[in-house]
Image (cartoon, rainbow, N blue to C red):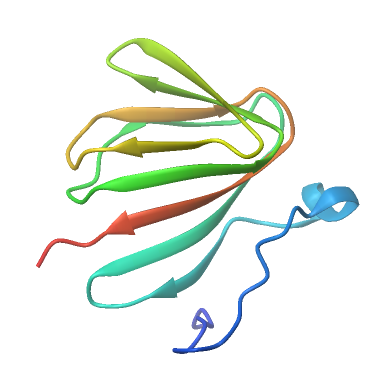
Length: 109
């Protein structure tokens, strides 16, 4: 099944999911030749292991609390906070609480 992505000029709702949080899954909202945006959904205690991507990244915590590890250092993000990562930085993401975040990845040409 192909993923449906938003089209140019189509509004996307990124408000907190609230009571629906744990019934939702991580989803790509849109992808273009230079940019990808996803809504990350993680249950408390779940994590993405350390990894890296070529492009720059932002992680904006929408709800809950996330622990982003970079070079062994912990960076806790709470709702309303954003973290920027340069391309190629190894990072892991763990949910300290049921959480959702907006992840933006710059796709190098």
